[in-house]
Image (cartoon, rainbow, N blue to C red; front, side, top):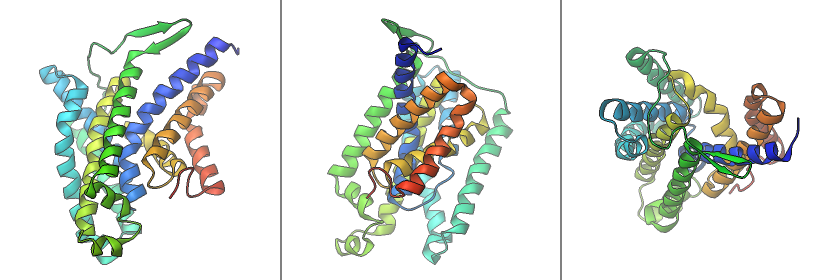
Length: 290
Protein backbone atom coordinates (compact mmCIF):
# COMPACT_ATOMS: atom_id res chain seq x y z
CA UNK A 1 0.00 0.00 0.00
CA UNK A 2 1.38 3.40 -1.00
CA UNK A 3 1.71 6.11 1.64
CA UNK A 4 3.83 9.24 1.65
CA UNK A 5 5.47 8.16 4.92
CA UNK A 6 6.54 4.94 3.24
CA UNK A 7 7.79 6.89 0.23
CA UNK A 8 9.89 9.26 2.33
CA UNK A 9 11.37 6.41 4.32
CA UNK A 10 12.25 4.59 1.10
CA UNK A 11 13.93 7.71 -0.31
CA UNK A 12 15.98 8.27 2.86
CA UNK A 13 16.98 4.60 2.98
CA UNK A 14 17.93 4.80 -0.71
CA UNK A 15 20.20 7.79 -0.18
CA UNK A 16 21.94 6.04 2.73
CA UNK A 17 22.28 2.86 0.68
CA UNK A 18 23.64 4.89 -2.23
CA UNK A 19 26.26 6.40 0.05
CA UNK A 20 27.47 2.92 0.90
CA UNK A 21 27.41 1.85 -2.75
CA UNK A 22 29.58 4.88 -3.52
CA UNK A 23 32.24 3.69 -1.07
CA UNK A 24 32.29 0.23 -2.65
CA UNK A 25 32.43 1.67 -6.18
CA UNK A 26 35.09 4.34 -5.59
CA UNK A 27 38.06 2.00 -6.00
CA UNK A 28 36.65 0.50 -9.19
CA UNK A 29 35.99 3.99 -10.53
CA UNK A 30 39.73 4.63 -10.18
CA UNK A 31 41.07 1.31 -11.47
CA UNK A 32 38.53 0.71 -14.23
CA UNK A 33 37.36 4.22 -15.03
CA UNK A 34 40.72 6.00 -14.93
CA UNK A 35 43.34 3.28 -15.38
CA UNK A 36 41.41 1.06 -17.84
CA UNK A 37 42.05 -2.02 -15.69
CA UNK A 38 38.98 -4.24 -15.39
CA UNK A 39 39.52 -5.20 -11.76
CA UNK A 40 36.57 -7.52 -11.34
CA UNK A 41 38.15 -8.70 -8.07
CA UNK A 42 37.47 -5.37 -6.38
CA UNK A 43 34.44 -6.64 -4.39
CA UNK A 44 36.63 -9.49 -3.08
CA UNK A 45 39.04 -6.92 -1.64
CA UNK A 46 36.06 -5.20 -0.04
CA UNK A 47 35.12 -8.48 1.65
CA UNK A 48 38.73 -8.93 2.75
CA UNK A 49 38.54 -5.46 4.29
CA UNK A 50 35.35 -6.49 6.08
CA UNK A 51 37.10 -9.50 7.60
CA UNK A 52 40.02 -7.33 8.72
CA UNK A 53 37.50 -5.07 10.48
CA UNK A 54 35.88 -8.14 12.00
CA UNK A 55 39.20 -9.41 13.37
CA UNK A 56 40.06 -6.03 14.88
CA UNK A 57 36.66 -5.81 16.51
CA UNK A 58 36.48 -9.44 17.68
CA UNK A 59 40.03 -9.76 19.00
CA UNK A 60 40.79 -6.30 20.36
CA UNK A 61 37.44 -4.49 20.43
CA UNK A 62 38.55 -1.90 17.87
CA UNK A 63 35.95 0.22 16.10
CA UNK A 64 35.49 -1.26 12.59
CA UNK A 65 35.86 2.10 10.85
CA UNK A 66 39.11 2.81 12.71
CA UNK A 67 40.34 -0.66 11.75
CA UNK A 68 39.52 0.04 8.11
CA UNK A 69 41.50 3.29 8.22
CA UNK A 70 44.50 1.53 9.79
CA UNK A 71 44.30 -1.27 7.21
CA UNK A 72 44.10 1.11 4.23
CA UNK A 73 47.92 1.57 3.89
CA UNK A 74 48.35 -2.22 4.01
CA UNK A 75 45.76 -2.60 1.26
CA UNK A 76 47.57 0.10 -0.71
CA UNK A 77 50.74 -2.00 -0.56
CA UNK A 78 48.75 -5.09 -1.63
CA UNK A 79 47.33 -3.13 -4.56
CA UNK A 80 50.80 -2.02 -5.62
CA UNK A 81 51.99 -5.63 -5.54
CA UNK A 82 48.99 -6.90 -7.51
CA UNK A 83 49.46 -4.23 -10.16
CA UNK A 84 53.18 -4.95 -10.52
CA UNK A 85 52.40 -8.62 -11.16
CA UNK A 86 49.58 -7.69 -13.55
CA UNK A 87 51.85 -5.29 -15.42
CA UNK A 88 54.75 -7.71 -15.81
CA UNK A 89 52.52 -10.65 -16.77
CA UNK A 90 49.97 -8.93 -19.03
CA UNK A 91 50.07 -5.18 -19.55
CA UNK A 92 53.73 -4.96 -20.61
CA UNK A 93 53.03 -7.57 -23.29
CA UNK A 94 49.82 -5.84 -24.47
CA UNK A 95 47.93 -8.93 -23.39
CA UNK A 96 45.69 -7.43 -20.72
CA UNK A 97 42.30 -7.80 -22.39
CA UNK A 98 41.01 -11.35 -21.94
CA UNK A 99 43.88 -12.87 -19.97
CA UNK A 100 44.02 -9.88 -17.64
CA UNK A 101 40.32 -10.29 -16.94
CA UNK A 102 40.90 -13.99 -16.21
CA UNK A 103 43.71 -12.95 -13.84
CA UNK A 104 41.36 -10.82 -11.76
CA UNK A 105 38.75 -13.58 -11.76
CA UNK A 106 41.46 -15.80 -10.32
CA UNK A 107 42.36 -13.23 -7.67
CA UNK A 108 38.70 -12.97 -6.69
CA UNK A 109 38.31 -16.71 -6.21
CA UNK A 110 41.64 -17.06 -4.39
CA UNK A 111 40.60 -14.42 -1.85
CA UNK A 112 37.21 -16.08 -1.42
CA UNK A 113 38.64 -19.60 -1.01
CA UNK A 114 41.25 -18.44 1.52
CA UNK A 115 38.56 -16.71 3.59
CA UNK A 116 36.39 -19.84 3.46
CA UNK A 117 39.30 -22.00 4.61
CA UNK A 118 40.06 -19.67 7.51
CA UNK A 119 36.58 -18.59 8.61
CA UNK A 120 34.20 -21.06 7.01
CA UNK A 121 30.87 -19.97 5.60
CA UNK A 122 29.32 -18.70 8.83
CA UNK A 123 28.14 -15.09 8.86
CA UNK A 124 30.28 -12.69 10.90
CA UNK A 125 29.29 -9.35 12.43
CA UNK A 126 30.80 -6.59 14.56
CA UNK A 127 29.78 -4.52 17.57
CA UNK A 128 29.85 -0.72 17.77
CA UNK A 129 27.83 1.93 19.68
CA UNK A 130 26.14 3.16 16.49
CA UNK A 131 24.96 -0.29 15.37
CA UNK A 132 21.32 -0.94 16.20
CA UNK A 133 20.23 2.62 16.97
CA UNK A 134 17.56 4.57 15.11
CA UNK A 135 16.86 8.29 14.84
CA UNK A 136 13.27 9.40 14.37
CA UNK A 137 12.46 12.60 12.49
CA UNK A 138 8.70 12.70 12.42
CA UNK A 139 7.58 9.58 10.58
CA UNK A 140 11.01 9.03 9.05
CA UNK A 141 13.38 6.53 10.65
CA UNK A 142 17.14 6.89 10.09
CA UNK A 143 19.12 3.79 11.12
CA UNK A 144 22.50 4.82 12.48
CA UNK A 145 24.15 1.67 11.08
CA UNK A 146 23.36 3.12 7.62
CA UNK A 147 23.86 6.80 8.42
CA UNK A 148 27.40 6.47 9.81
CA UNK A 149 28.75 4.49 6.79
CA UNK A 150 27.12 7.01 4.44
CA UNK A 151 28.87 9.92 6.16
CA UNK A 152 32.22 8.11 6.19
CA UNK A 153 31.77 7.39 2.48
CA UNK A 154 31.16 11.09 1.73
CA UNK A 155 34.30 12.07 3.66
CA UNK A 156 36.34 9.41 1.82
CA UNK A 157 35.02 10.66 -1.52
CA UNK A 158 35.93 14.24 -0.65
CA UNK A 159 39.45 13.21 0.38
CA UNK A 160 40.08 11.15 -2.77
CA UNK A 161 38.55 13.81 -5.03
CA UNK A 162 40.76 16.49 -3.46
CA UNK A 163 43.86 14.31 -3.86
CA UNK A 164 43.12 13.60 -7.51
CA UNK A 165 42.26 17.22 -8.33
CA UNK A 166 44.90 19.08 -6.32
CA UNK A 167 48.11 17.03 -6.51
CA UNK A 168 50.43 16.33 -9.44
CA UNK A 169 50.20 12.56 -8.94
CA UNK A 170 46.43 12.76 -8.68
CA UNK A 171 46.13 14.70 -11.94
CA UNK A 172 48.54 12.24 -13.52
CA UNK A 173 46.23 9.39 -12.49
CA UNK A 174 43.34 11.21 -14.17
CA UNK A 175 45.40 11.67 -17.34
CA UNK A 176 47.23 8.35 -17.65
CA UNK A 177 44.62 6.58 -19.76
CA UNK A 178 43.74 9.69 -21.80
CA UNK A 179 47.15 10.82 -23.09
CA UNK A 180 50.04 8.59 -22.09
CA UNK A 181 52.52 10.39 -24.36
CA UNK A 182 51.74 13.81 -22.86
CA UNK A 183 52.23 12.33 -19.41
CA UNK A 184 55.66 11.01 -20.39
CA UNK A 185 56.60 14.42 -21.79
CA UNK A 186 55.86 15.84 -18.32
CA UNK A 187 58.51 13.47 -16.88
CA UNK A 188 55.93 11.19 -15.26
CA UNK A 189 56.29 7.42 -15.50
CA UNK A 190 52.87 6.03 -16.58
CA UNK A 191 53.59 2.65 -15.00
CA UNK A 192 54.42 4.23 -11.64
CA UNK A 193 51.36 6.47 -11.90
CA UNK A 194 49.09 3.50 -12.57
CA UNK A 195 50.75 1.65 -9.71
CA UNK A 196 49.87 4.47 -7.31
CA UNK A 197 46.34 4.70 -8.73
CA UNK A 198 45.72 0.98 -8.42
CA UNK A 199 47.07 0.97 -4.87
CA UNK A 200 44.75 3.87 -4.01
CA UNK A 201 41.77 2.01 -5.45
CA UNK A 202 42.50 -1.08 -3.36
CA UNK A 203 43.10 1.08 -0.25
CA UNK A 204 39.53 2.38 -0.49
CA UNK A 205 38.33 -1.25 -0.37
CA UNK A 206 39.63 -1.58 3.20
CA UNK A 207 37.37 1.25 4.37
CA UNK A 208 34.43 0.09 2.21
CA UNK A 209 34.73 -3.39 3.74
CA UNK A 210 34.57 -1.93 7.24
CA UNK A 211 31.40 -0.06 6.25
CA UNK A 212 29.91 -3.23 4.76
CA UNK A 213 30.24 -5.30 7.94
CA UNK A 214 28.64 -2.46 9.92
CA UNK A 215 25.57 -2.66 7.70
CA UNK A 216 25.16 -6.43 7.28
CA UNK A 217 26.80 -9.64 8.53
CA UNK A 218 29.23 -11.01 5.96
CA UNK A 219 30.54 -14.32 4.67
CA UNK A 220 33.20 -14.91 1.99
CA UNK A 221 30.94 -15.05 -1.07
CA UNK A 222 28.95 -11.88 -0.29
CA UNK A 223 31.21 -9.87 -2.58
CA UNK A 224 29.72 -11.50 -5.67
CA UNK A 225 26.43 -9.75 -4.91
CA UNK A 226 28.02 -6.35 -5.52
CA UNK A 227 29.71 -6.99 -8.87
CA UNK A 228 26.63 -5.86 -10.80
CA UNK A 229 26.09 -2.80 -8.62
CA UNK A 230 29.65 -1.47 -8.77
CA UNK A 231 30.02 -1.87 -12.53
CA UNK A 232 26.58 -0.34 -13.13
CA UNK A 233 27.52 2.65 -10.96
CA UNK A 234 30.90 3.21 -12.61
CA UNK A 235 29.42 2.97 -16.12
CA UNK A 236 26.37 5.10 -15.29
CA UNK A 237 28.48 7.75 -13.57
CA UNK A 238 30.91 7.93 -16.48
CA UNK A 239 34.25 6.18 -16.71
CA UNK A 240 36.81 8.30 -14.91
CA UNK A 241 34.34 10.61 -13.15
CA UNK A 242 34.60 10.50 -9.35
CA UNK A 243 31.70 12.91 -8.83
CA UNK A 244 29.67 10.98 -11.40
CA UNK A 245 30.28 7.78 -9.44
CA UNK A 246 28.82 9.38 -6.31
CA UNK A 247 25.74 10.65 -8.16
CA UNK A 248 25.21 7.29 -9.89
CA UNK A 249 25.53 5.44 -6.58
CA UNK A 250 22.83 7.64 -5.04
CA UNK A 251 20.57 7.10 -8.07
CA UNK A 252 21.01 3.33 -7.91
CA UNK A 253 20.52 3.24 -4.13
CA UNK A 254 17.27 5.19 -4.34
CA UNK A 255 16.04 3.08 -7.27
CA UNK A 256 16.76 -0.18 -5.41
CA UNK A 257 15.12 1.11 -2.24
CA UNK A 258 11.95 2.17 -4.06
CA UNK A 259 11.70 -1.13 -5.93
CA UNK A 260 12.36 -3.12 -2.75
CA UNK A 261 9.76 -1.14 -0.77
CA UNK A 262 6.92 -1.13 -3.28
CA UNK A 263 7.56 -4.29 -5.32
CA UNK A 264 9.50 -6.57 -2.99
CA UNK A 265 13.18 -7.19 -2.15
CA UNK A 266 13.44 -10.01 -4.69
CA UNK A 267 13.22 -7.45 -7.52
CA UNK A 268 15.98 -5.19 -6.17
CA UNK A 269 18.99 -7.16 -7.56
CA UNK A 270 17.61 -6.75 -11.10
CA UNK A 271 17.77 -2.96 -10.84
CA UNK A 272 21.56 -2.71 -11.14
CA UNK A 273 21.75 -4.91 -14.23
CA UNK A 274 18.82 -3.08 -15.82
CA UNK A 275 20.53 0.25 -15.20
CA UNK A 276 23.78 -1.14 -16.64
CA UNK A 277 22.12 -2.41 -19.82
CA UNK A 278 20.17 0.82 -20.34
CA UNK A 279 23.28 2.94 -19.76
CA UNK A 280 25.31 0.89 -22.25
CA UNK A 281 22.53 1.13 -24.84
CA UNK A 282 21.60 4.81 -24.45
CA UNK A 283 24.75 6.57 -23.21
CA UNK A 284 27.79 4.26 -23.14
CA UNK A 285 30.09 7.01 -21.84
CA UNK A 286 27.87 7.48 -18.79
CA UNK A 287 26.10 10.52 -17.41
CA UNK A 288 29.34 12.34 -16.57
CA UNK A 289 31.64 10.45 -18.92
CA UNK A 290 34.82 11.99 -20.21
